[in-house]
Length: 243
Length: 206
Image: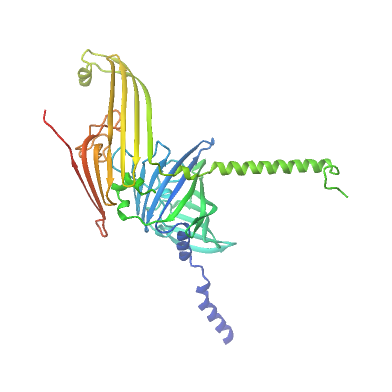
């Protein structure tokens, strides 16, 4: 009897070591997707139900936990537009129109399925807390809950590959539980500098039946830029950062 | 025993082989199409030393006027009730991107024809040089468009702007000749950004 109690006590002590640390996995997902401070280029493609496509090319820089800026390079009609995100606050600058105007995370400066929060994404750990972490086959399943009501999606269900600790699929839901969109990560690519991650993110949404948007990544690398870059004054000067 | 060559192959074998070949061809085409569908070439993001852009617009308007209104009496003293107007616009822009400076020019040409007769505008909308001394400090000189305030049709702080066209508030406007300096500094703490813009505009009486 005492032997059984001893075994039970040992199991109870050891149990926390076996538990999955969802927060640590999410932190690892963030760092495996992108360095904390980086620059990168992206092409966003909106595909309509009739097959028509519209493409946008963006140059983005991020610094620290909550500063992101993006400059439109194409199409010609959008060139020079720039967006800035500081925490939950976002602005859009349109050359020739006026001072930057505030935009919201659920709007989309490009139309399509990607919204502003997808385009100017912060680390998942910045916006979400892990409610549940479990293993399923070769994947971790993380169920995330938004830390505040200002976050674009109230809940995320993230399927993370155990080997690479990178997301395969993310389902984004509203507070009501309604699925808003599904993000699928594809095409693993070595960007150099120890960065190896999916180079394609596809998304579709039951809210936009038949529509699809794709995000392609290129030239992702670590880069530290001054804090001044992440100010409204700099939105008209982001081109100066490009080499 | 069934042979592996075509000579010894049965009809179903040949059909199966053709089907597999067709499937393989379709798969190759699909792969090629997929790769083409999502291509992202480095040439698309290369920084260009010289950039040129522009647009042309042709517009035809049929306006119904109120001759007894204040604006109607001012603009058309003869008491016009209808106006058919044709407008052609050409705007061209160019930029020369240097390591620490940008030189740019934007021109505006407009040809208007209506019952009042033809008229033409050709002007430099803006042009000059911006020199970034460092990330915090930049100098600017030339004909520049300043956009102060966020108002759509009217800005109470638009001190150095030409009035907006109330019929088209987003249309590009002509700048003023000026020299400017901008300083921006990010700080830690509750005051995160401080910026200062100083402008000098030549003025004359008469």
